[in-house]
Image (cartoon, rainbow, N blue to C red; front, side, top):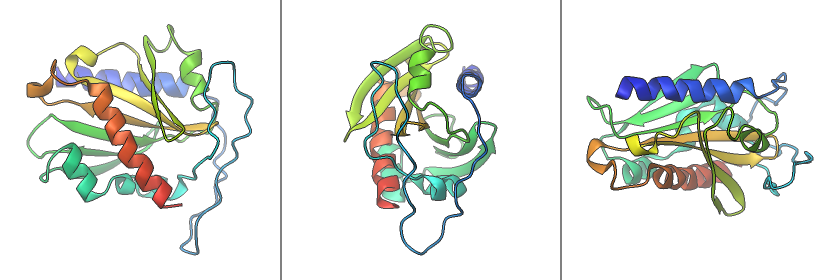
Length: 205
């Protein structure tokens, strides 16, 4: 079951990349001399797509994705025993937090390599690329959207997109422990993780 879940997560990322229009990353190299300027958020959005009024520059976190969650935040979400493992795939730099010698629970955070149509691409893919597309309660004005190539919430898995500007999102996924499948909403847990990630990346700007 876990192997199937990993395959579906990879498929979701592939679909996300497929409906994007990659551009050359011209972001400046982060420095320690104060906060980086926020990216532009002047994109014209289709009707119904939420706008990000205060875009966030996530460049520094792309270089160190495992700093997106602090140790206390990881303990709240998973366990004091949870460990972080960075990786760099086609979708972008990412970090996975999990408990050693177990396959569940897991929290993943992925920083997209692509600056494109942001949250709008998920709305555009509803019913085609994404069988699951459900807006969740925004976090302090930042849109959160549950999405999936197929709906595997009943298996204890959910991915959400957190809009950090009108042209970029970051992905956060939650995999519940076997004991919590059917008892907790994996999208609610993914949103809880998004709350903590947002607090961290806003504090870093």
